[in-house]
Image (cartoon, rainbow, N blue to C red):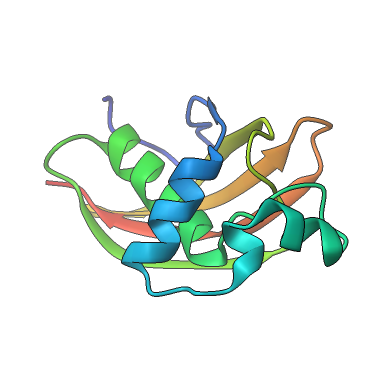
Amino acid sequence: MNTPVAGDLCPPQRYTHSSVQLFRFSAVSWNAHRIHYDAPFAASEGFPGVVVQSTLHGETLSRHALAWAGPTARLETVSWRNRTTAVAGEPLTWTATVRAVEGARVSLDVAVLKADGAPCVTGTVELALG
């Protein structure tokens, strides 16, 4: 990776979460809410499928930022706000723009976008480059 500068766009990363992944993430994060693993229950609550956990969005924001920054980067902070619900099997895209670079510290404005381009999650990730 070249030295980033403010305004740089990170390559977008497209992905989907499977219902199995959501079930497993619920198990390891001790999240027992049935909307994350029980499709009939999620439907009874008005969702079109099992719902992606807020904390899984945070993990995804961090993971893709670290992958972009390279193997010596360290996560400093991550914060995000959920804007709308995402469900298993839904196509999502991670996007990021370099907001600031101060020495070895890089701040990214990050988002998870739905297929129509609407933001599902927005936030910031700060990294220390190694």
